[in-house]
Image (cartoon, rainbow, N blue to C red; front, side, top):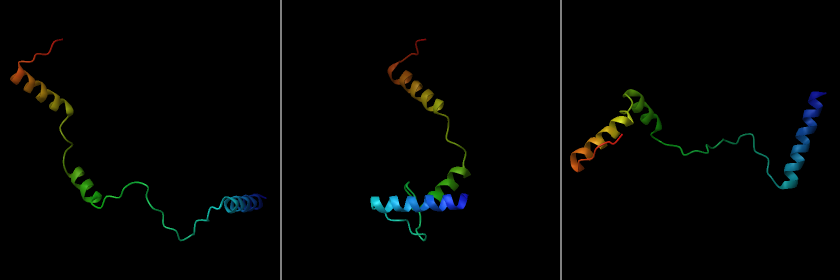
Length: 78
């Protein structure tokens, strides 16, 4: 029973596709990725994994605050 219902469903879907003018997908079709393909992605990932992660963002913030304090005499008001 299930196979008959499934076959009927596929027949109905094929008919709907024909009525809409949608061509059936050939069985030998090769899927194409939707995202960009980077040719050097494997090398990039190997380089990223070979080294430690970048320094924490807090270090950048501390350096910026020190620079402001040195150049402009800025102070943190808490």
